[in-house]
Picture 1: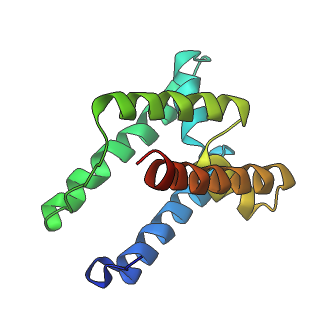
Picture 2: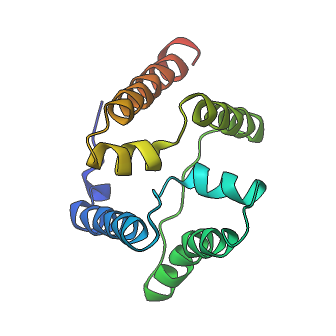
Length: 143
């Protein structure tokens, strides 16, 4: 295995992580809500009165952030080594996993672990372990 050091970006990664943490902290401070993206999006599918505006604005911010960043400089080009069928299957599996896990990586991994939630720590460890196994299987067994 080799590491592509030219793509090692500790400062921009740190800044991005800090911005994610700041957004999560501000959402829970001002709205009392956890910044779990699957829960935010799911709440739009079954809206409660007066609950949709903040959800739409949060999701709009997720979409607009890369566009604003792109005005400051070029965005990196993604390198996706999967076809449309594999991406569709992966998306469905992630969606199923968020339902079974009662949340996604942002809700459990960012917000839940920051609160030292045992359920979120277990869920995040499971996400990471399944990710390792999946990559190993796809790269070494089924390649």
